[in-house]
Image 1 (cartoon, helix red, strand yellow):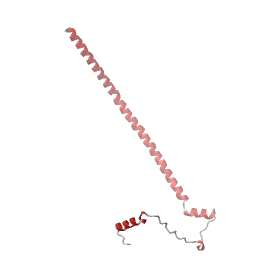
Image 2 (cartoon, rainbow, N blue to C red; image 1 turned 120 degrees about the horizontal axis):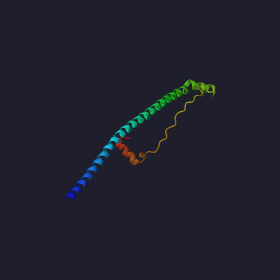
Image 3 (cartoon, helix red, strand yellow; image 1 turned 90 degrees about the vertical axis):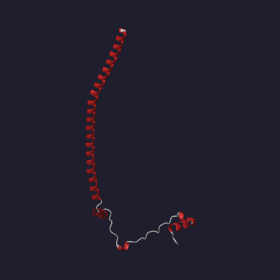
Image 4 (cartoon, one colour; image 1 turned 120 degrees about the vertical axis):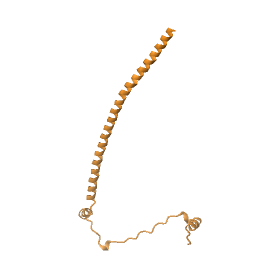
Length: 132
């Protein structure tokens, strides 16, 4: 009987020791994991803010480039500049009134419609209440 009690107390002691070891391991794991998570979070925030700053810098550079290109485009598309180039380089002049010809636009080409069929024409007139 005493031997059985010793075995039970030894088994109980082993279980208690295992539970204690597991509890200590989980406490140590938590003690390591919480600061590591805090450091990881701070590193993530820092790298994200650096990337955001770099993107903002490149955005401002691109906006300046867009403004520069617009100014160049406006300068190059100035009517006076184009007329000067046309007169000096190409030898072009405004046409005299005798050289101007008015061309009337061509009559629009009528495409066949599904209402060209007599049945559809009657249906269209009944829907639109057209008397013609």
